Length: 410
Image (cartoon, rainbow, N blue to C red; front, side):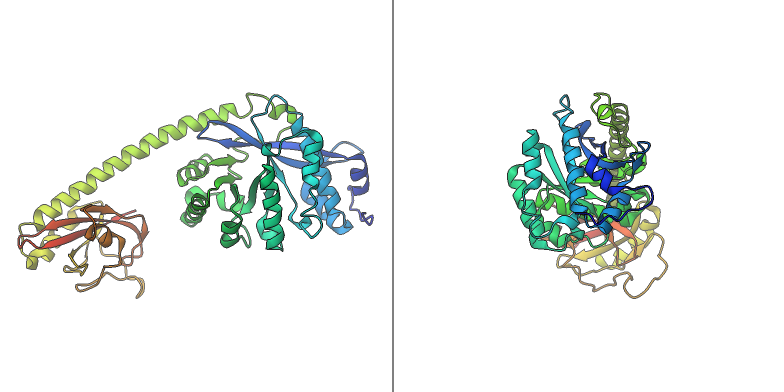
């Protein structure tokens, strides 16, 4: 029971007794499927005096002080399930349902109360995705048991707000959620922030390895949507597509359709443009390789540096060039198109005699028949800049095998 604590304008006891909770729904979008695939239930308290709505943060803050968080959480779920169950014409949607992590304690996590609520309404667990903020659950064992129980029933398990606070990659790998919901704080402005893009890339990579989908939450800008999609996010949610809506509005077949169609068309156009640019850049890089190789092949090893110094400044796509022998030992200088400003001892060009045997661009061509390789973007130790290394095997005038390495700006 609640201990009667109230805040101005919040009669929590009356809200609980009269079940004055209203559910709004926010669409969850799949651009690949070009449709709304689910809705998140967002609970609001309702004032008895004028019907005004109270935000959930305020409601749960009062409930925590009054010792009735569990009662409020269960009421919010009951109303959300009832409202969602009333969308008879939208049986293609999933319900994303939040669970307050503070209630996952002994005796509650295994009570099956949510299962009983779904069963009483005749709602299949396969249509419910349960959202949990894993960083706020104190007991890993309770979290795993709770997730296991509801996954066996057919529910999807969603980790909410991932990327905030103490989000734990190790615990995510152990839990293997069906969906990882990336927090708004990471998504907002991701189009202009390489650090955020790198974190998103890591999350997508983890999701791929454990069989999860990635949902980008809080998308408000077109460019952020484009970036999240390009980095591998499967689903989107945010004000760009729709603010939370009443059940009647969300049930409409036209809900979000115009926005989805416009983004889909823009994305398709952008993908075509990106592909065209990649092909042009590939052609430019190949032209650089051809030019440098044509110069190196007829020359003795002693003339390699002279040729690189002459040719490299003319190659706009290039950051630097160097040559390895068949054993991965650098046999030329590292020749830059524009020498970088010195940063510190970690970032300095490799010199003749440097060993590259552990580098992917050496290993890939030295121990295979590929003959040509392009690395993923990485932080260059030569300059401190992001780059890719293209490596190509060639035979010199002395019939020895060499590897030309070209660092291009990423």
